[in-house]
Amino acid sequence: MAKRVKLLDVAKAAGVSQGTASNAFGKPDLVRPEVRERIFAAAKELGYRGPHVMARMLRTGKAGALGVVFPDNLEYAFTDPAAIELLRGIGRECAHHGVNVMIISAENQKQAIAAVNNAAVDAFLVHCYSDNNDIIAAIQRRNQPLISIDTDIAGAAGSVVLDDHAAAKGAAEHLLDCGAKKFAILLLQATEHDHFGPMNANRVGAASHRVVRERLAGYHDALVEAGIAPDDVIHIECDNQSEHSARLTVEMLEKHPEIDGILAMSDVIAIGAIDAAHTVGRKVPDDLKIIGIDGIVAGERSDPPLTTMCQDSVEKGRLAAEMALSDEGGKAITLSTKLLLRGSTQSR
Image (cartoon, rainbow, N blue to C red; front, side):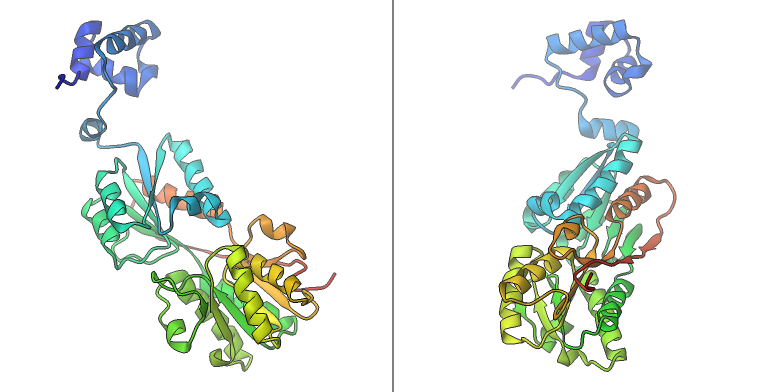
């Protein structure tokens, strides 16, 4: 096997110190242009492949990157509107600091643990994931900052979450104010085990994801205050895709035509519910009112436009990245939502 060319070899060939050669690759503004070109020419001639990541980490103590762990597959991270907004915020803050982003999917636990173990990053951001699993344990063994986003992780250096309880309670109170009396809740996935469709009381009570637990509690609190017991509410667990929620909502409305208010845990799910209403001939908002949570752009284009509890997902991501890159101790940040009134709950 050919001997790996080291930075020291390049420095000797270019007639400079190893520190100058290192700056040419890592801090080029500190090296005169003619010296940089001489170093790069020597590197090319010797076949130098660039600074070794782990060696640079040992020397500087920094990798210059953040790891972002999503519970879903990578396609979800780049197609789900709320996830895209979150990544925009993370990317914005990382760009400000000259730091890169590594995205890790936790869908395959074995692959995710390997990625965590080998990741050249300075901190981890974990989005919507339970702390009761081996992936989080692998991250914590790295002894690097872990910032939790929309989830509770014991020992996290800091957290950024939405006030999901208040958002959901506000959504339910709005539908009550609009005159809805028979409710259905369209949930996000409640546990790490797939189970989509109607939920019994045991399944509702077993919800393990923080966002689902908090939003359920908010919906239920508002409805109970109005004299509506949770057992009198239809609960449907949905994949966070409009086509999926539309199919399940069609089935629900055909079985329960008395439903006149739908509380959807995401705008994506709510848009599917609007499509389902058209399919079964229900008029939104005249005899069926629908509200989501998120505030994604697609909600403006639904027919009718979607009323939602709007959050700033870009700012959420930016704050999480800022916390991860800060030398100060982490803290807990709770963000609020605001009611964005549109045509899915009120007639024009």
